Image (cartoon, rainbow over all chains, first blue to last red; front, side):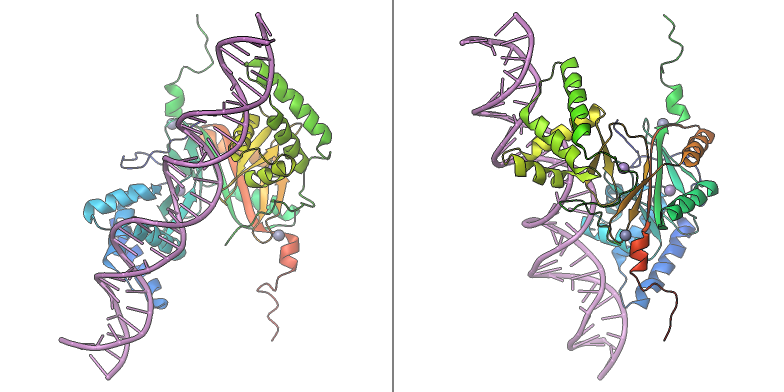
Length: 178
Length: 178
DNA sequence: CCCATACTGATAACGATTCTCATTATCCTA
DNA sequence: TAGGATAATGAGAATCGTTATCAGTATGGG
Ligand SMILES: [Mn+2]
Ligand SMILES: [Mn+2]
Ligand SMILES: [Zn+2]
Ligand SMILES: [Zn+2]
């Protein structure tokens, strides 16, 4: 069961609860927040950080680092991979981006400004990622944890399966007409 | 937030729903199953596969591959890392072991003979892993997925937090007595 | 006992990420 | 606006878990 999870240089289409804006205004607020955060702790801001943030917000969705690197380099070819990794980690720390590790061994980041917590449905056929929120599940998680003496700090819930599109395009085991 | 998830050469203690037996009898049935499975597809069985299966079942819990390698080598020093990886993948295929990938970047395997599906609570303090089953959550997952056109094939639910022991051993933010 | 073939061990290769370190940029101060 | 302390960068080496390669070994049916 290989998982593809597209989103390299391709364009997503309906990814569910995705942010509404095209990322332009979001990028601006993100940059402001980052600026404040950096100043607070005596860090400096740089041209490449700006480029990376803007590109990242321009992509939207669940962005793999190598995809981001590619896009950033289209704007400024000499930005290094290391810097992109460093910057994304920074964005995560200051709450502008959320790192996600699905089952394909690479970290993706998704913008988080103005977005709430959610979990993911991942299509094992086409890699489509759909987001969902379910308050009942969240509550049950807390309750189950508590019943075992745990206090939940974070959780990971990923549902893997086939989306409607992929199921339709498949023979499937049913209707075995000769 | 570094996650430790012990279980290398250390001994677990109460790991929750863990298998009851000490792994001796379990290992036997596992070996039988493996034998049948291998024969069915014209594969051969080998001394090292036996050693690995027995060691694996002797350890119980959620075994990281490198920990398994260490133990196996204590019995037969010339078993190679590659063989252990290959064998564990085999056990997974034939349903004797389940691979788990928690958030620390290494694959663990847990024995699965006679065990049912479950999810995990992971202590971010001491690495303790507690297992749980919750039918309501399972149902809700299926329902949520369906409402988005997905048919769930598998899922991953991991709750990260601090166990009772770890919370007790901590100052905590409450009771700020001067 | 023979042979086809699966399995093994040693080690190279891999992919994602981090580290190192010499160089450069930022920004605060005088 | 120049100087300097120090943070950030780029390039590539290094790391880590895992897989691939490939020549040599073991297994099991005949
Ligand atoms: Mn998301
Ligand atoms: Mn388990
Ligand atoms: Zn699909
Ligand atoms: Zn703990």
